Length: 68
Image 1 (cartoon, rainbow, N blue to C red):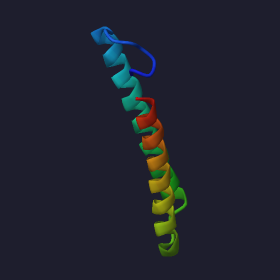
Image 2 (cartoon, rainbow, N blue to C red; image 1 turned 45 degrees about the horizontal axis):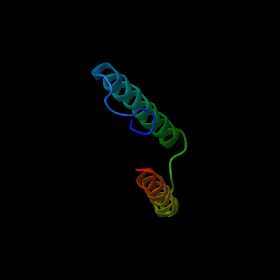
Image 3 (cartoon, one colour; image 1 turned 60 degrees about the vertical axis):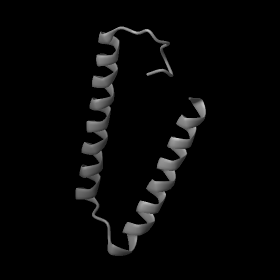
Image 4 (spheres, rainbow, N blue to C red; image 1 turned 180 degrees about the horizontal axis):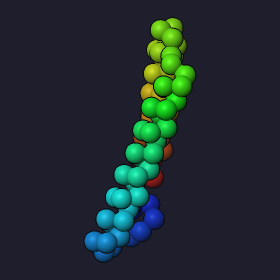
């Protein structure tokens, strides 16, 4: 939240952001489960998929950490 607003922000703003991010997370989980059910991974495709996801998580973490 500190990317967009400077403290002190009101409680309702914090609640609104938490609801927004929770809905975003639930939507992402829903989309992920739907993709897994419609296109199941073969055994040889699981580890490259996990590796690419780990790289993307590291990129997002490093870009977020560099802004703070």
